[in-house]
Picture 1 (tube, one colour):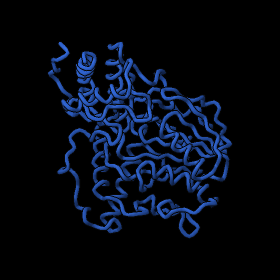
Picture 2 (cartoon, rainbow, N blue to C red; picture 1 turned 45 degrees about the horizontal axis):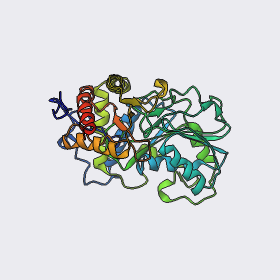
Picture 3 (spheres, rainbow, N blue to C red; picture 1 turned 135 degrees about the horizontal axis):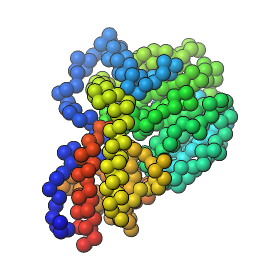
Picture 4 (cartoon, rainbow, N blue to C red; picture 1 turned 90 degrees about the horizontal axis):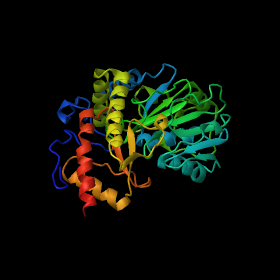
Length: 376
């Protein structure tokens, strides 16, 4: 194949964005249930569909009965902020940061809540020394660093006997990686990542210790209405039964239900993890066959199987923009440039809603774009 010869095979679904991510295979708008649209979310049908969505999340994600699940505003960001603003301040705080979203929680804790956190950092592509974490503190971290492709390998490093709360932003880890539910007090995610759902809504999962914190601690700062999980001195239990704090998009809820029902159809959590692992393995094969490609996360043990970040030999931000632009122009791959704050490179979503055959089809297109730009 010469540099001007286009590959003959394209990904059938060239959607590789790391959020919002590819819709589930077979998705189309006409397949969504619409009976709840145009109805109040507080009507019987609205409550039923919101409750059903929560039940599906519990079933597919295998969330234990000890943990409450709520649909909240503001996507994953809103869910994390809700946990921070309602629970932090009772104990010292440790924040872990090895990519942009972790740094965002550092900024909010330090500059907005004025908590003076202990910060444990690592560069993009690396994982910090988890043994440094003091579990007498509350601890916030990203389970899977979406913008660096680095994840925690498991929950073994989290203390079983801990004084502080374990707060995990797991938005690009859930449905693709094992979560140690006995170690997690607060977990957040959004539908738009591994489920391929729509944005705007987040999911907040609270373990018993997080509920105890809410019931026994009142933060010093005022709480906006959309963050309030307590009502008249008690936990607002309705939030965890589908009675959302503010008005949700029932269309987004129906879209999430479609994704969760699809997840059940492919084998639930185990099936979803298997699909993500197969996609990551297919991409890794492409990387190993090309000496100009590499993994930003050099250690396979902490390398993501969803948001896989790649290095491109000698590439700067302009080269990556042109590289991604060529593939988008030919409808071979959309949205594969790395995150703006990360080192210049590519980022390929390998979550379960992507088909492995579409990952495999990327190799020749990478070669074509590389050769085309090298000749210019």
